[in-house]
Image (cartoon, rainbow, N blue to C red):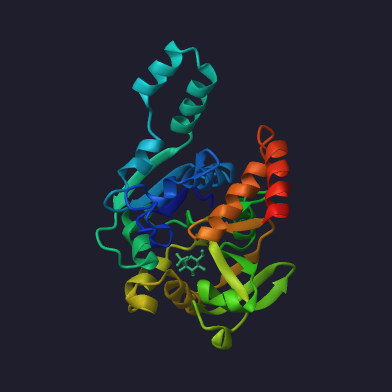
Length: 289
Ligand code: G1P
């Protein structure tokens, strides 16, 4: 079965990046000159997904506006002869179909995914978290879909992290099946390093079987009093197979200050118009710092 739909939760408050996120949704903060959410939508599109479901919250309308047409702005740019910019803006509004659903209360990531239930129906779907940017030659979601297409069951994106960092992620306990592929036996959300079953962390990309919804309905509030997606998937893994895949690519957590700065530098270094000058600047800054 071909997967078409992606759920992208965008209701989070962005507290780690306050005060920047007081009035600007964290998803629209730019990495160089492209909002974080656009990289994530691009990854979904490049992976072959065609319908994005944003799970939004109050104050987040401008995220949808970013993917809408902007006729007044385009007209002004056209009058000024800035054709390339007009084309860029049009490409964004034509990228993909977007529908949205509100998460009225911040009850957790699992609850956010549950809000998309009626829009998904009874088919497998992808989830992409916009705090996680993944720079990879083959888009990360495409890598997961390749495993899904072979196995027909849920697949989670996995990354090995240093032990002290396990407390920032959902961590799996699992069996290695083949190169990079694991079968998930259990999962725990943000454990203390001494309690973690492994150092294999879930990064924000998932392919989920629709049975996840009945699991999420059932799980009690977990860490932080929130309905955790991790707990829902742990329940799913008790009912049917769940796989995890150690993807290839570089991961940036742009919901975190240091991760945000790292991503900004890394993505700027990939840009032909910025690379040389930035390299010179970084060398000088390093020798002075
Ligand atoms: C969420 C998930 C966590 C996962 C992480 C990946 O946490 O709850 O399991 O490892 O995303 O970025 P958050 O970072 O939203 O607190």
